Length: 412
Image 1 (tube, rainbow, N blue to C red):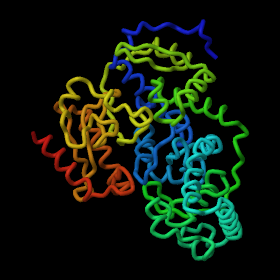
Image 2: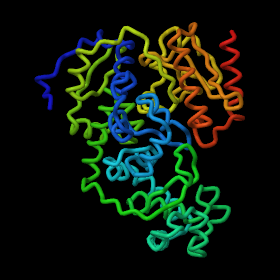
Image 3: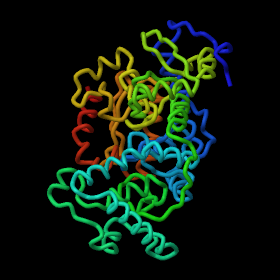
Image 4: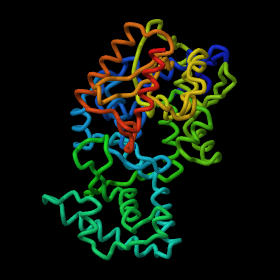
């Protein structure tokens, strides 16, 4: 482990936006440095992939390795990777080594659902009893054709043990007691949910019994582990970015940063990044690549989502090009997917399934490398995925305006 005395001091003026963008690009393996790795190792190295019923997980792995969908689905089927609720209660696709402590991070969200029901007059004992009944049903179903049961199937078996919460419950987002009980079981690693058709870009799930051992660590140790991993994935982050991803309090964040051995590194823009000492040494000797390196990424790729800092990835010309756009491409969450060169956003894209093509616009005339990457990505989406949804409710109809806008901007 690098000590503070062995850490290279970097003059802040050296850490300009161009270098930091390229540094993040490298740390995310988008420069081809992780091309030979498998799905679990990629997620271990670059961070958990956000899963909201969209195709981000597939493009995350394709952009770094060229991995086809079938290989990703096989990794999920063999439980090398799995979709679980974790940081902030949000679902991500994790590598197997992170399942236990990742679930521990998301436990508070499961408890929040229970509290909603308690405010509606449901005693915790009733929810826990329902959870035990669900678990018994799923254990009894093991090895049968009905091993995986969806919520409707569970309701059919459980009958009136699932309580309908009426109109008041609907207003609170708790129509029945079933989701809260399922959430407790999933947060404890006693059940897991599986996509009904094996694909990770949809949101129809069934549940199976599971026996995942706990992490064996207390919450404080898990928070320190989270920040060590997060800083490794990003190559450095501000305190605000740390807190956005983790939902830790300021006190929890600072304590976990100290436990992880993180140090503060000022940048040319006046920000202070928290970094791991050995990453500071690597960054001190890092040089941005001279040649183009083009990728089309999802708007929820870990490059932009982990720190929610897409605005930092535009240079001055790019920021001016998208200024005033509907949906604001400069907002924390991108309105379209980005086209990037060494970490700098140079254009935007959407997939048009009706015409089996990528609709795109670049701020400057597209180079041969950009055109080649657009063609390759479009061929992969058409042949391997069929469509590219951002999230579960995304559809060709819902993105039609964005596609038309990109076409108009490109026609110019």
